[in-house]
Length: 237
Image (cartoon, rainbow, N blue to C red; front, side, top):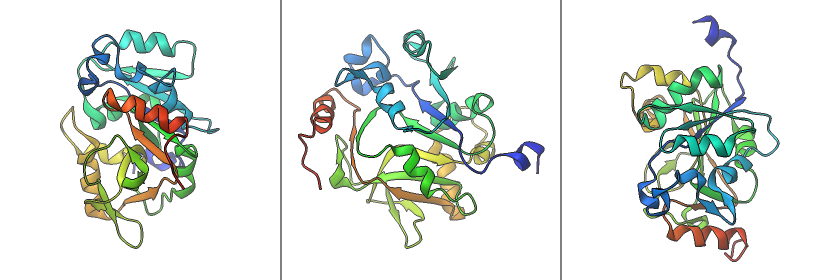
């Protein structure tokens, strides 16, 4: 075991924001700006994502590629460091490239194309995190509490909360992950699903449930859905 691994903290103290994509599903809105800067209810999507920190004091890093200078200007003066990508590395490759900025130990990762109505996502994840059993803990939501998302769901879980692919809960884009598994993958650009497959085989990928509402803002039509949800025009328990 390396010295870094031996001294790595058990609890996450850093957040990786995925903000480098081309936003093709958001065209024409993304023709002139990166998707994380598209506004919902008057605020950029990346600012809605940062709200999910709650009161956690996290070291924050966002990857950037498409129109990266716009993202840098928006974040200037704040507490988010940019990890610029000369070429798109996807979620796994982007996270691995940002590890020197994030520091050792498990990290939160968060997509920047969703809006939430309910408790802050990352403190909720932290309360369910058990580093003795878990390599990853994914925050998921039942389909009936998800807006703007097509499909039959992403994950099923067993009685202990271990996840496996299947038509069940929808992954919200928020997780805690131990990054060591990224070193098992040779490709420079790859999706985090490659790491998840290995964790599923080892029985170390777990799911936690989000109790509020969530909207996938992946295309222009979803903006109105998200704004109605934030204005509490969407009925829920």
